[in-house]
Amino acid sequence: MKKILALLTALLLLLSLTACGSAETADTKEALTRDGIPGSGSSAPSDPSQLDLDLSSLQQEEAFRELEHLNLDPSGMAGLRLRLTGEVLRTESHGKQFCYVCLRDEDGCVENLELRFPGDGGIPEDFPGDGGAVSAWGILAVEETLRDGETLLHPVLTEVGFLELPDFRD
Image (cartoon, rainbow, N blue to C red; front, top):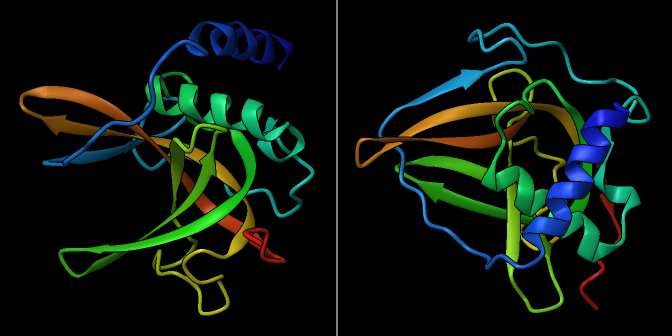
């Protein structure tokens, strides 16, 4: 755990000079787990205090940089028990609904993490609406995405538990 935090901190310092934003289209996806074997993950932490990384406990800018690093290089992070607090973004593509938790930095750049809920993966009825505030926790999975012949890694928070928070946009 200490090695992971030390590595994340070192990478955070290196990434503080990078630009934000990226586009992504998926041709194929395969969920990877801690051992790199599809479908062999552990269940979500029923107690959100049992975490490997709690982005909710960090300052806004630090949490943004950690999530930015995670999105840029999620290799080796599958199976991590993670929590983050941010703004809900719901989108739809090809008739399928997607849900994200978004963090913003002081310059207005946005980093997000896709959420996948237990069961059929559908968004629960009691999950906050678009623009609402939420604290979400779960198990990090890493998906492979093939784009223009290149394999990209995409982190996804699976087996998500959540707590709706008061709206912090005001």
